[in-house]
Image (cartoon, rainbow, N blue to C red):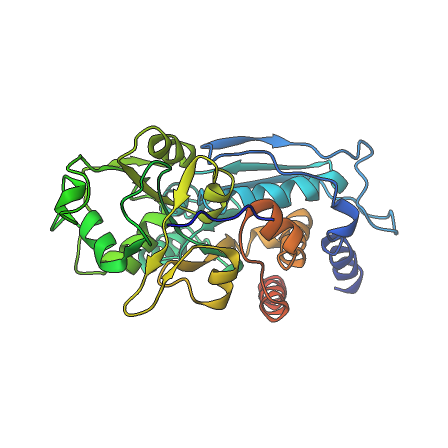
Amino acid sequence: MTRQSKRSSVSRRKFLLASGGLGVAGLAGCTQQNTGGDSTAEPTSGGDESGSDGTDSGSQSLAGDIAIAGSSTVFPLATAMAQRFQETHSDVNISLQSTGSGGGFANYFCTGQTDFNNASRPIQPEEEDQCAGSDVEPVELKVATDALTVIVNNDNDWIGEGLTVEELKQIWSADTSPEMWSDINSEWPDEPLELYGPSDASGTYDYFHEAILGEETSHRQDYSPTEQDRTIIQGVTGSKYAMGYLGFAYYSENQDSVQAVPVKDGEGDYVEPSLETALSGDYTPLSRPLFTYPKVSALQEAHIEAFTRFWMENATSREIVAEEVGYVPLSEDEQQTMLARIDDAVDGSN
């Protein structure tokens, strides 16, 4: 098994477009905090003490609160965008929580407590029904592509080129639930499997379940579940016989501590998770889209619309999305589609 290399209304609309288009060039000096999947992050203030709106007009300024919950996988990307936005909009306070995709929908967004929900899988019909019951209308915005990553301890030297989808299914299925590595392959150590992964409130859990196990097979429950991606890294780092799975960004921040497992799908080759293999479509079936869902009513507020546009304007940035956070940026066509969805949501409710 190889190791992944280091990674390397016109006036208002004009104002919001200018604000959202402040882009990477003017903000390139900002660096992301090491969030590590923490359950909460305190609101941060930008560096502009004057509270400038970041435009030439000076006739309007942005101020207010933005509450975001949801996916731990999208959390570091949302954090990077929030920090950059606040550098030029210091009167906007953005509060981020890492609750898991499902936990965010059920407990925060669909109950009307937050303005956005980040998600590492699409919103489910039952979540849409819950939101509708609270008059919350979500807008689906793709923000990046992830390569969901299976990790093992650095001292694991027996799985060779990697694991097949069938072997991963055997390991994580409730129907088989092997206890020892040797239960999967008789040539592997007669040592207990130690498994770490996200909880069932996580979109990462949902996606792995769908892609690897399928609808007819249950995910085993005798593992260490957590919404703290740092805990998954620590668990796998601490035991030679451990395995876990999580979003690529967290692996890329810790690739000296753990190994990424190449995955073989069907008759193809073993493929390592990377930005390139996710973008090319070679890393199957574990490459996946990532989303954020603002609610239509929130987009009627100038500071929230501006932040949403800012995020989408910078979603094509390799510097932010790929190099800093560790995901595949949007294409320009995808970006324009997302911006059009924001336009429709804002104009359709006026």
